[in-house]
Image: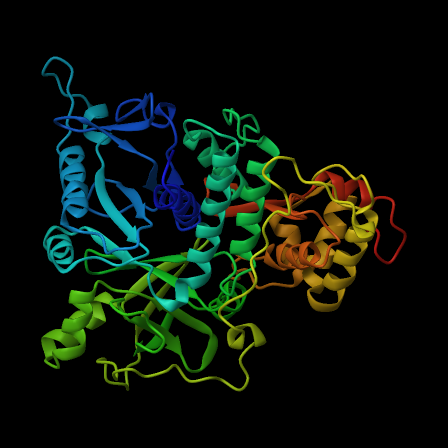
Length: 511
């Protein structure tokens, strides 16, 4: 049977698959995406190297062109262990990326334009919830392997959500007396539930594991992640150094509003070791004290962090600027660059808390931890929901008239834009395009729609906690993406659409 840490690592990789898909990458999932470089193996996708083929579970293809080099592809690997990641794991990452970058194929010694144009530059990003050992960090820094430390307090909610899903699935498998865990099918179901997969098959062989239970946990995981303090999760930050940063916004909606009309933002840098577990790296915060919505937390490899904090030379100052305060990230197709505040010293103060803004949105001052919602299902039997609010005997995953009415009333009072979009989409047959959303919400053209559906999912999570809704109920409003970067339109869940069409004004659809 699969270990809890291994299963949690696989689930974390699926969370990261959604991350890279929403941060400028196309997710490569099968040989059909690039028959020249990829092959479907018995245990997953294989990437051809000069000396061997290498299995990869999450592989991203950067959609934005990179000048004067081959297009970039990113290997993503995640470890969910209790101890720091050691040298062999990082050395393996280097061996893989070196071998695939050396792959070069020709037909009988003849080179054609296809061979020149089909090459890629591969990078490797290794995520860990327990940090990295000093030898692993030194090796990674020397060979440009990106290490992303998720051990900090800011990532508590992410770790708890992933750990909860893994523990629940593993206990269910043990109770079902499975000899082997259906890893690929479970990962595929989670990827679809998180919206990271380009296509949802809806058909999985869980090898004896209750299918309703798996889909229930996958749905709960998605809702738990989206209901957290940062909403839709992490952002990838690209620096002038050879490292990728995983940045956690205080609130995705507030960040989108703050950067709507800006492409360059001056930020300050602070380091916070408060509340950290022993041995974990500290938390760095990039923030703009004039815009409360701009606040991003991240972690660095301990060796690099220690050097930046102890070396007060101009060399360290410049390196800090290149690594932390010259960062580019994307909100859909809106590119934002963070640069150091011109009138502030670049080297941060040690153990400084980011100031609390009196006028900051309430979510930025919210507690870091929230209650996680998991299925009420027992292992032996599929879930049933007999609470009067969910209509006795209602099928698994069904929205009721009372639940939809409660959703609309709460949206109308707190998020009128989402309220109008949901009703207008229903009147249009269940879908609404991007341009119509901008008109209804009265957003400027530069405003990102990243996180637009979060209020509907957050209220859904509240309804689950309060007993109005089963945890397997679909999200009310779903974004559909073009190439995984830009939401092109939004779709209403079919069962909500049917109920909406029966509701009288003012909650019914806008006809």
